Length: 320
Image (cartoon, rainbow, N blue to C red; front, side, top):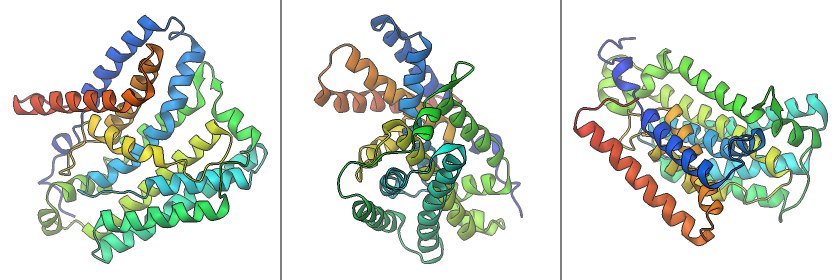
């Protein structure tokens, strides 16, 4: 496979540095108004709250890098949540079994999306809207109202800490580490190449359809993992659990520096972008901002951050 025309260093740059700077600024302000912000429990709460959105944004980033949109994230998260709450599997073995179910559900939905988009020629937004509706409907069939109970071992373990580090933080580090490996593989290089110029990528020997399909499968797996983490935190089921994360997922992707024109960005920036959005929400609550203003202020901060990153590109500043 010919990939010499595509440079890893030039195509895997993301807005991780800018979004990390934003997070630091927000955290300093948060620490100034919330005196317990530096405690282990407060830090754990921040990481736990951010992890479902961060993992969902990581999955969505893979599709955005290919100039696509994946709306099925909301349906997959909701479906995984109600399955785990309706059929809890206790103990460590049960938690692994639940994880397997979550990943299998996500990957299956991703495979359907990938086959229809990559090989069927359907538009990603149309296909994933359909699968979002289908999975959301199936979630309502399984659990028609909030209820159920997630396995106690799962909810306690995934919201706990190991040597002062939140377990959910370790999961995020694992996702980032896996991404660092993937982006240096043929698939990772192909992902950026297809996003930048699908025709040129095809001429260089890259299997565009396989790359696109595999991206949807991996993204679906990450959505399943997001639903798994969300279930551990809520400890209960809700057939619309993923709906509130849909728009925030794309907001986190934009805030993390991934271009919706494709080929520029990365999962790390999206994860930090998600953490920044959730921290901003926490900060606004701390200073007494009413809930209906929070979305407005989150949108303003996102526009300012994206504008700053675009200005950096215009004046030749490299992305982190």
